[in-house]
Image (cartoon, rainbow, N blue to C red; front, side, top):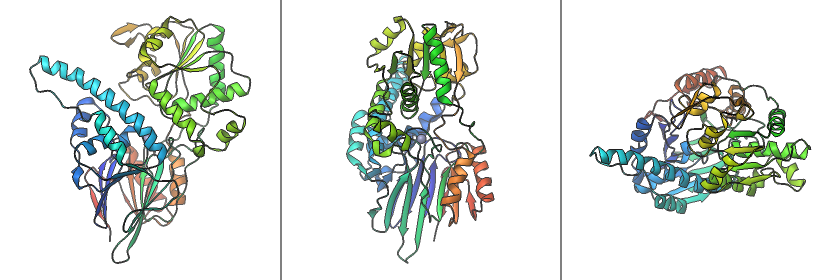
Length: 465
Ligand SMILES: [Zn+2]
């Protein structure tokens, strides 16, 4: 048996690992690398495997850095099946189409310049018809149901508590000489006790563990009261007929914010205020969250028993067209706008920002990690004046942050998980992290008793008897 680390090795994106066992070649995830445009462009185009030689893919969850290169795999000749939980398949159907649209719009812009310079044009990475073809290959696996995908290879999926449908992937491999290995891949591990979704699980007995390292060297701030802060800010904008703008990722974070608004409403603490969810992708993702009650935790189920959906709130309206979105600019407050994208790098949130930054009564609430060189980061740093769509504007609006909503477990969460799943581990691999995080994870795994610990580099292969 052979394991090769192809992506998300010494970095956080482009998750892809190759397992070769029982004569089959199986990919764990097939994600897009996300980073500087030129580098990402090169890396994503040059798949590290020949798609025609791959028999199956097992997908941990729908995020683009785990699923986003699957359509290209299909475009270049992969014809096997892609196994994932049903919720992941539904989310991929909307996320991959959205990603395809954004990429190709970007590419048009690049090609326009190249055409003017007389240079050869770039082909799209994939097109919508490739997503259609991929969806035909996607095959649901139910949680906790061991599924033999080939003789000697059985896959079982467990909750990873990260986003809807996210899974821990357990693969049992039984070789010809009766050798048995149990591989456990964490995918992205969620933060314990997050709203809406069930907690991650602890499948036992693995001898090989692949563990993510995104936040291996840090602890999340203790659960500040998200609800109290939201209440305070909403009351403030309500009093001044102002606007509260929340940039949020469409999958996961948007539904969490809606959930907290729902709880404020139930407690009689939400003033009558319009709430606009301004992103077609957020609407689709929220509808998928609303359908999958079987993934809810106890608190979310209690909301259902009150006769309400935990991902809906009174006063909430989805904004569909760009015209409706622009019209919000002329509409007087008070109002809450939840808009994509989460790091303010594109999408509708940008024109809202441009309109609201200059008014001191408005509030911008940052609820997620903001990477360097993004508009979101410049807002968190309160750069004044602030450059938005090429224009320098005074940043007069109040900027607030909530840091308690990470989708990834921190150091203590990761090690709580490892201590329970890793009792029989012989080989542990730290993946999905920047080099210093992976190194922190490597040290933690050694401290926690793992006998053989590796932090693989891209392309590195390991053999197992
Ligand atoms: Zn993820």
